Amino acid sequence: MTLKAVSGAWRGFSLAKETAFGAIQTVDTSLCFGGEPFDTEPGKVWTNADEFTGDIAPTQTQALTWKMEGKHSQLASPHNLALFLAWLMNSCASAQESVGPPAVYKHKVSMAKSVIECPTRTVREFDGANYLEYPGVACAQVSVSCDREDFVKLEATMIGMGKETIVTPDPTRPAQVAESYLTFGDADIKKGGTYNGTAVTGGTSIAARVRNFKLDLGNGAKMAYLFNDPTGFAGRAIRGRLLSAALELSLEFEDRSEKTALMDGSTFVLEIPVIGKTIQSTYKYEARFIFPKVAYSKAKKGVDDGLLLLNAGFNVLADSTYGALDIWIQNSQPSYL
Image (tube, rainbow, N blue to C red; front, side, top):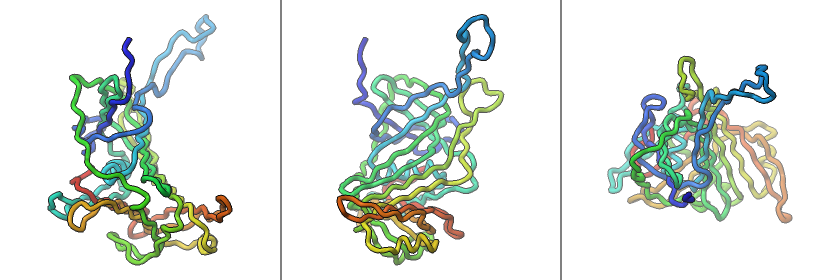
């Protein structure tokens, strides 16, 4: 028996969403990743344990459904942020900003309220032993976080229809996009100001006080298994009723302004612009997270080695004009859905 190592593993995604659930798209971008490889497994398994069979153990078993669940963990770049956030939120409007070279594109990612069925992509992975293909994969959750002296980190949770195919002959790894990872030094955090649907004007930077931030976004996606489909694979992916958004900051304590705003129920604009290296001319790699209307959900004091801290949480609310969240990403890729 020959042992297998995961050291040569890679993971690829279709940049275009599937035209129909499970309809395989060309896998044309690959990413590095951490954690476990993807896998399919039985979703619901039946045994005849509830039947009297004349024996003291079940005598039959059957897998009724199949599922694929996995996480993609990686340092964040504009490319992988755009890929997973557009996948999660199902709305990505892209426009060319400059012909370059290299060309520059800006992508506006926001939550599509009217779309019930989640977009799906085709995923391929080499796990060190086999080249596997997974169609009908939806993105259910994305987490973006960063600490001082560290990189911005991305983690995405994906769920699939449960179909897994060994690809033969061995496919070539898709191209990787050459972008630098984003760091804590690229990130600002701004409170207040006015959002006009494109950019925030005004506002005050609180970045010097921030020790870390974490944003968790989820669409409540789940797989639906349909009647008259004996395959055991899911037949569609359906999102939940609401976008779940949890934003937390750990700050060095300065005064009681956050506690006062919590008690008053004040709402305000919050922006986290992450600006990386130059693409060309005055254009830079960017990922701007803009919350048009947030309110404190907590402003709890803490202590670290005698230093007074503030652990702040936010309710992300829907603004009547601009919704709950706009994410503006700038890089050299033309589109993400």
